[in-house]
Amino acid sequence: METIRPGRASDVPGIVEIINHYVVHTPVTFAVEPYTLETRMVWFDQFAPTGRHRLFVAERDGKVLGWSASGPFRAKAAYETTAETAIYTAQGEEGQGLGTRLYERLFEALRGEDLHRLVAGVTLPNEPSVHLHTRMGYEQLGVFTAVGRKFDQYWDVAWFERPAP
Ligand SMILES: CC(C)(COP(=O)(O)OP(=O)(O)OC[C@H]1O[C@@H](n2cnc3c(N)ncnc32)[C@H](O)[C@@H]1OP(=O)(O)O)[C@@H](O)C(=O)NCCC(=O)NCCS
Image (cartoon, rainbow, N blue to C red; front, side, top):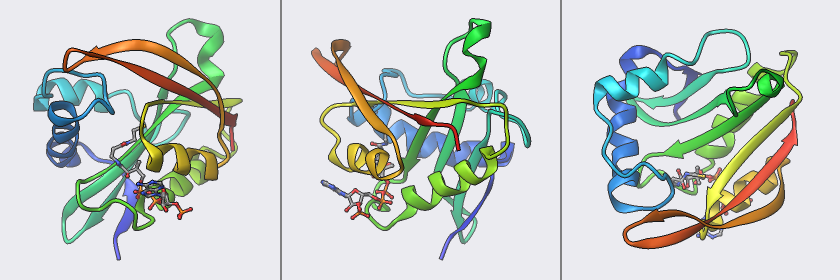
């Protein structure tokens, strides 16, 4: 069984390895260039051990298997009580409840923080992610059509929201 704990700077190499698979081979993230350690450290620096913006990782035998995170939704001040969440598991670790446990741990940590809404965007099609977000209390509000172009193709993004925990 894996351990789920707050993410550390030393997890970033493992995170880069996982995310770059999805960057290079899939539209689930709209990044088109693989991350480097440096560019992913900028992402890591938005999280803190307390407050609205958290990072949790799942680790087994010293290996990062996935993460959940809550980051800023938009920069303008009135959006500060809304966080955008993200969740990824390593290739080969899907469908074993890891995503569920990572989101549960994140929501537990966010309880009591000054947050009002969680939002998430899912590139379609992605049945496991749609299923997970729905089961974790998110409601699908609508679909932005053809808002991303990757692999010379346009992709739709479903938008989800839920009350903050
Ligand atoms: C999406 C993702 C985070 C889900 O995490 P996970 O550990 O696989 O999720 P869980 O096992 O906790 O739950 C997945 C749910 O989807 C269901 N599911 C799995 N594969 C499915 C599929 N192909 N079609 C439909 N449902 C599926 C599972 O049955 C499970 O639901 P249940 O527990 O109610 O039966 C993970 O698969 C992942 O990282 N995928 C690749 C990257 C990605 O898409 N990230 C999300 C970007 S928005």
